Image 1: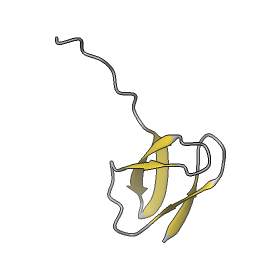
Image 2: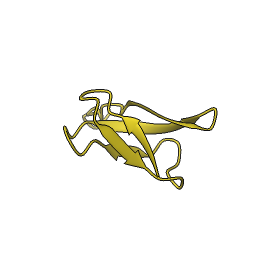
Image 3: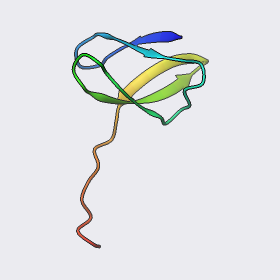
Image 4: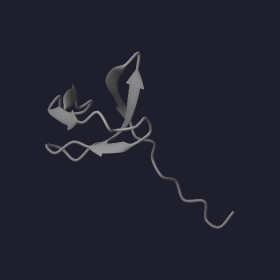
Length: 57
């Protein structure tokens, strides 16, 4: 298990070694969703992209 900091509230978000790049993880403290990434073999979080409506287009 590794811990990375939430980008919103700075709480620790636990991720394990099986977590893959692009997986969405949620902060247990504030509920913010992050996209998980491995960068140079180090765990990293970025804000998850917002899902936008396409209105059938």
